[in-house]
Structure formats: structure tokens, C-alpha cells
Image (cartoon, rainbow, N blue to C red; front, side, top):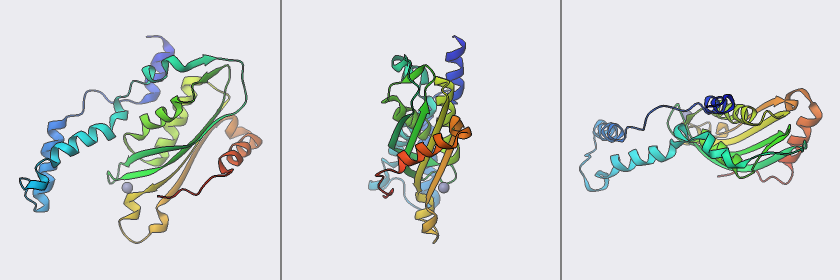
Length: 210
Ligand SMILES: [Zn+2]
């Protein structure tokens, strides 16, 4: 494996092995028993299996091959204007409660001789969103991965999301929406670049709502 590939795998922060579905089924059965439910009653009989398959899908990002994901979509071009992909929907699971947080991502970079096909950026967001996450780390991982993949002049990532754990528990519902950002390279050092990005993602944007 060449150094660049190795660096991309490293930036993807994958987990080894496969998801252990029998163990999830057993755990869910135990949760049902612990609640006082009857895991054998009609409505619950298939639940452990459904939950095991659901987690396998929702947590698939731990085992996405990042090199296969981007391989046919890296292009060497002489272009150095800001590339922005905004309003990328994403779904993740907060690692504190294993409840969903749902929102949208805005991603920008300034190329330095290398660009990525636009359709790949939502898939990179998905690769990191489909894990147990905190929003701050998700934001940073997307930015760091693009930085490693493209070595651009700069990368900017803004995530806004609603956290179900904050919405359905307690009373502080106004705290449910959270905004995080990571700025690398010229987005960090150059105020005009940063302002251009924020002006663009603010233009015509609908407020995030569920
Ligand atoms: Zn939570």
C-alpha cells in the first residue's frame, strides 16, 4: 500500500472485524427482560433481530472502505476557487444515549491541484455519521479526512443538528439544536475566506427544522 492510501485509511478511523449480530440480539433480549417485558410476545419476537440489523446499517460507517469510496473520483485539475457543498442531510447516533441526532452539513475546500467528485462528499459525511458520535468529533473527522485526501489550501465544515436525546428528555428543548464547525488552513487564517464561506451557506438557507 502506498503512503497516500495508508494515510487515507488512517484518517478514516475504521474499526476491525464485523459487527457481532448474535451478541446484539442477546443484549436486546436482556434489555426487554430488564424492562419487565416478555420478549416472546407477538410484537417483540422479532425485535432483537430487527435491532441487530438496524445497528449494522446505522453503524456501517466504521467499516466503509474509504479508498474504494473515493477512488474513481479524484481528479488533478488546475482550479483554486472555493468548492462548496451545502445542505447535506445526515443521520448519526449520539454516543452518550445511542439516540439519533439529525441535521445537515456544509462542506467547503479550496483545491490545490486536486479535486474530488461532488457526489463523494455526502458519502464521506455518511461514512463518519454512521457511527456512535459526538457532533464535535464528527465535524473534525470530516474536515481532517478531506484535508488528508486532497491536501487543499483549506477545509471548512459546519454541522447543524437536532439531538433527540435533548428533545425527548428533560425540559431544555431549546438546547436541542447544536452548531459545530472546523476550519483548517486558509479558512482558519484568512478572515475573508471564512466570511465568503459563511455568507454562502447563509444565503437563502431555510432554518433547520424537523
Ligand atoms: Zn445524547
